[in-house]
Length: 328
Ligand code: PEP
Ligand code: MN
View 1 (tube, rainbow, N blue to C red):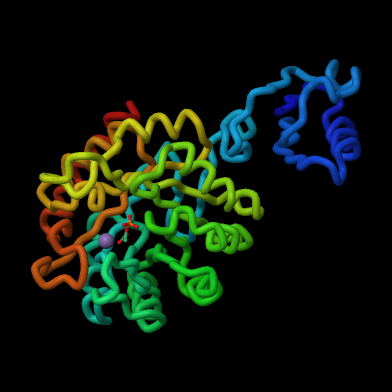
View 2 (cartoon, rainbow, N blue to C red):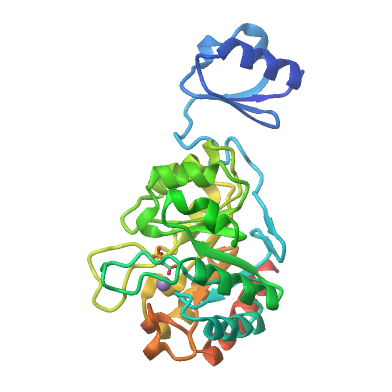
């Protein structure tokens, strides 16, 4: 249940906490108090009277719900302000390949208005024989390339044991689609204060995604953004995944977290990235995460979906224009 208090807020919060101490989980956000698994009949009359509303039917992912946290969560990193009233561009290659390459790609990303540099140093590959990433060496190059261009870093952390290492280099943890329900990893990033970008698993429902986010929030970290990156459906003949564009406004209604569109993984084809980026922004995404490469044919991973620099620059111009239009 969620109790929305209208009177004697701090006194009543203290009362509710005391009442349910060691029995139920009590979560507080401003005048909203969630008591997990309790019903209104358990509340004394004074609290019922002090409530503006008592919501009995609440989603399991309670902290990730707008019922508990009505206002948007804004994520601020040194160079980015991630919220639905602005457009954040995160761009970079799928993998950090070598020092020179990530420096070159960082300059291109920046030129298109990106404030966050992406690049995987630990890669979740479908095959164990594919390139697995440069590891810590890759993190060093990525950090240096971002710093040189006045940008922040987003990079994937694949394993709970790597959280402290990746934390030394990144501004945003990326949790990949294949790890969306890696609960020990979610708990570990939930203990940090570093923003987390959680990708929707390829077979995950919207509620699965929200419950995964709840694991992070339950640890005390609500600096969460959700990434729609396409889901697996029956037809993968022409696109790698199916971009669930409706998930963007649905998530926006349900949750206070900013929603980021990843058109690259959603379609897997560079020629469809620009229209899908446009669709994501028109649907209300707070940002884009896009893969770029100057020589996609020789990319270490995800070459077919990488935008070449000129295409990327044109895409970002269009993206900004659509965002502007939507804001009017
Ligand atoms: C990636 O961002 O390169 C990646 C592996 O994405 P996903 O987890 O969405 O497949
Ligand atoms: Mn990729």
